[in-house]
Length: 223
Image (spheres, one colour):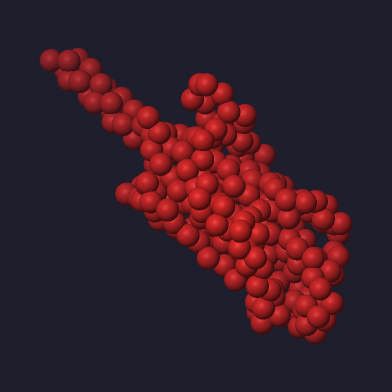
């Protein structure tokens, strides 16, 4: 009887462990765009950023295939109308529109996906660089940690140079665990960081706002 109870207990433990590690697949689609209204550049304080975390464990988006593979690009995007409206507007500039499929686990510290887009600036930075993490608990947990770099015009440069609080470089919150990409300081380039966790429901379009940047995201269960 004791042996039978041990077998039952072991089976229950294995079943519980498998249930805890069970996961679902989701399609993640993003539009990341710049706000062309540059008023906020002169009106807000921006810390100097010369370092972008490099996470060797981050996933890279793979080419789309006929199979369902982790982190492969989506061949059919559902936010085309939203992207078209942004592109037609002089108020915004689309930096990235794309998506991928991935397994989503019960965790608030998911494996991030590396995003990089836009032109390469004089200091070696891409206009858009950073990471997107998607995990879940009761809700989906969306965690962008992206860096947007752009050139400053002379008036903006003069305003920021007169702000003494802007002369102290900062490190990313991820710097303690990741290697760091260091870029030379070029006064005419401003880099900002958008790092905002957000709980979401699937099949809904969500918007994350920032004075200089915006993200439209839709996370959809994948069959």
